[in-house]
Image 1 (spheres, rainbow, N blue to C red):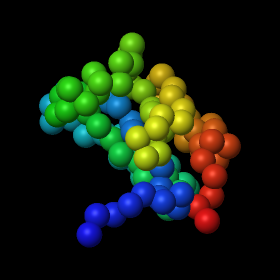
Image 2: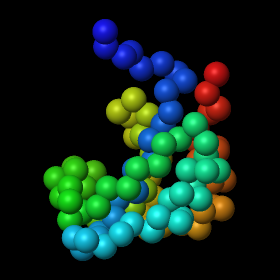
Image 3: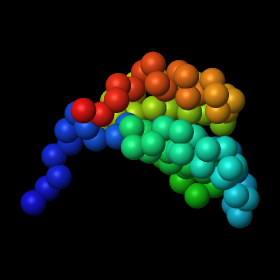
Image 4: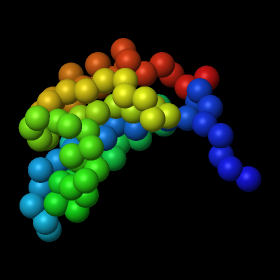
Length: 99
């Protein structure tokens, strides 16, 4: 049976990174975001070296960039990696708490 998306499905924050192959994503920053956002938003890093077509599909003029999605709809976008505190404040304003 297929899973049907509901209003309580978490949004996904895609962090698009210009990482050379083999270089690790900024794990402490992403882990910090995930811990503070909890179940409302899933943080997912996508590096350009491993997934160039996916990164290009977002048409970002420069990397890194953050794109918040829910059920295939873009809710918010920002060039660069903002401080975790600023990003948390922004995301809490854009993503309602799951019901």
